[in-house]
Amino acid sequence: MEKTKILVVDDAFFMRKLLGNTLKDIGYSNIEFAQDGYEAVDKAKEMQPEVVTLDVSMPGMDGLEAIKKILQVSSDSKIIMVSAVTSDRVIRQAIKHGAVGYIPKPFSRKDVENGLKQHIHT
Image 1 (cartoon, one colour):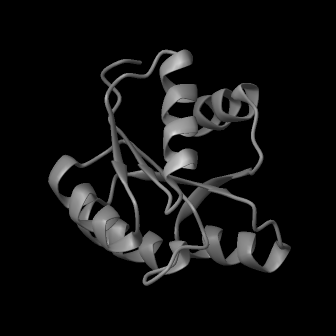
Image 2 (cartoon, one colour):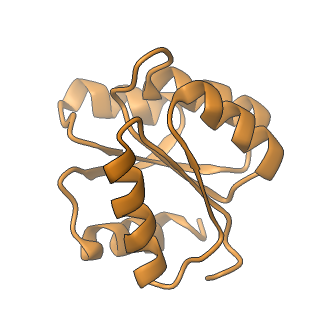
């Protein structure tokens, strides 16, 4: 698990830190962070992460737009949305754009662990 490259994308510093710490607690250590969609695309191009956790609501480029751009530069990445936005319409759009899963905020350690287990080796 420690070799799995994960990119955590959220505009809120405390959410990046919380999700990063949660990932470390469940055994992942190769974690990078981005604070918006633009930085996420740049980092995804550079690091080619296996997994990207991506917030929906971010200033500038939102998560739905970022999905498409990330997959253009890192087509093998599995994108899991981690967001407080839980409308069916947004979830359907995220899946349509290429996300493989959705973890609602607030999340528990078990939510993150199950979300990764379900999608990380698919």
